[in-house]
Image (cartoon, rainbow, N blue to C red; front, top):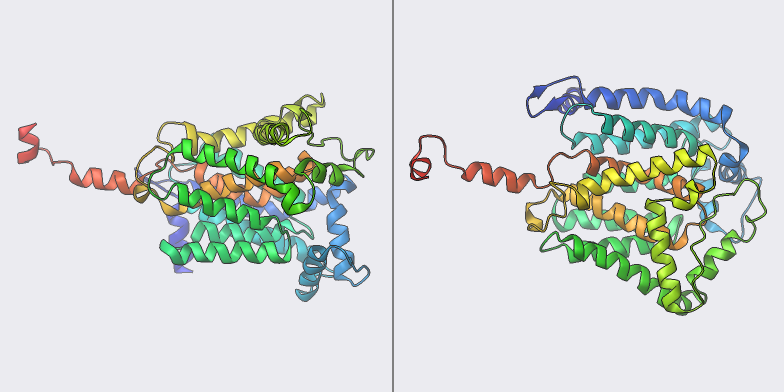
Amino acid sequence: MNRLSASLDRLRRTPSGPVEGLGDLYVAAVVALLPMIVVARALLPDRYSYDSNTIASIARREYHPFEDTSYLYVGRLYEFLGAADRPWLAALIGSSFAAMALYPALLGARGPVTLRAGFLVGLYVVTVSAYLGQYSKEVWVLPVVFVVLVAGRGLRGELAIVAAALTYAYFFRTYWALILVVYVGLRIVTSSALRRRRVVGSVVGVVVGVTVLAPVALGESIQTYRQSVNLDRVLNPDATTLIAPPELGANPIADSIENVVALVELAVPVPLAALGSPQYLVFAVVIVAMWALFARSAVWGPGRLLDGGPARDADPKLLRAALFAIAVLTTQCLFEPDYGSYLKHLTPVMPLLIAVALRSASRPAADARAEAARPAPGSVGSARE
């Protein structure tokens, strides 16, 4: 209890002293999760529970998916945990993991509660309530995110992240192996200096490379794969937010351009806003705001993480969070069938975005060394100046 109290006290502190801050925001978020889940289950349409109902039937041994072992594994896991006939326990598992992943994201942040912090944490609570407060594959992403946020420095920390991501890829979603490959690649290109051009160029290179190699590795193009997933959704009234990049032709160059456009449309979902529904317009604005806050801290804004400085001066946990989130977005542009699935799959990754967006300084080690090297007033060095 003493350790927990000390940690919550750290959440309440700013550079100027203790205030009622992020610790209170964390407590408010945790307290709100279960009531919000109850409200979500009562008010949301049935389409938000399709996957949950399938997993629950597997956990109760009422259904056995012969072709999709990922559903089988997650259903058996809920059965092992005693949640087969206890949806309230599934909700408790989801909310507990969500709270667990949010904690280190806020613990590393600095400053009092701001509009930005309230927006991001509030959005996280809302999406967790909608998507993760039930039987879900996405709930099991949260332990991976937790490992990314708390893994120690050096090779041992990287190996822990690799092990966590590979475990999820093996049992639940095989394309997470690609997320891991992209993450490791981004870690390599930023191993010496945090240059944003290298990161952006690497992301575009991955999209183009996977697009070109997909016919060899998968036996079909990425576009064909996405179309096959969407085939039974086109006439479904519950799926009106299909991700359909502009068709520029049937060749590797055109396909690559289409997938790069799809990547941009995930962060700036113009097609979603263009549907004309006020609900989808709000979703689009929220998605843009979330990625804009992340990008301002990581890529474009003043004091950004990718500032061109030496990698050794960056907070390794912050850098891992940013690069892993970018790896997830890069891979999502290749496989996501619709914006509803996209937001559902993005929800457990949000603590990474929160950790990056709420950090007020991207290079604490460099700042500390600069402060230590600065001559004190009245010293010999100061007099020479």
